[in-house]
Image (tube, rainbow, N blue to C red):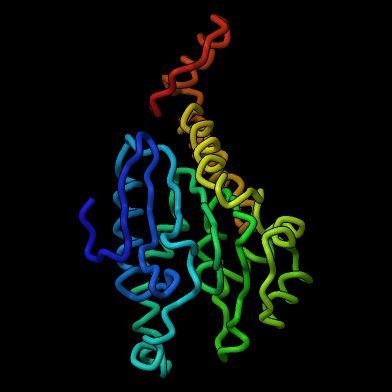
Length: 261
């Protein structure tokens, strides 16, 4: 896949779309061109029927160490400049938030600030034991985005969210798992295999059913349920060839072969 920046690598591994943050010299700190690349990759994966699962991961032993602060003076030093910066990043946030396919965050090393915000947009977060999490916004004089605060509250609850946001302290993978910030913790050398096993399971499931489940959970978490939309997704599942295949496979005692239609 050809993107506008080499700092984001995107490609397919079977039915898995892999998006790699490729700025290891800065521990994958997100620059504006990387935000553009994220949007391009996710939009491409979303339009590709062959992609059933999306995996986000970093190169060089880190997930994302935050935003590229070296760009702040030029890009975010005033409210006007910040508005321009946000307009560019909004496309990526929209692509993350609206991804209809399951998204897995494969987290190694630093997952800080904007990196944590990206990881929280994933549906499943698997961390290596060396992963480190935190939100240093209070130490930089910034307000963490409201959508990201909501995601944090939904995962860890209001009290722990305040502790993370107000102190700016970093937490390790084990504590992140205990408070619900990540779904599992594995050894560094086993991270790829653990994520691959989950992706393999998801690939075997019915894409339309997973889309309906994901959208239902997301709407409940947002506190804004569109029953008409959810009913339409449920009807699409009932009328799908995949549901017929699932019934036949059950009766024939075999593994179903879903096609996403």
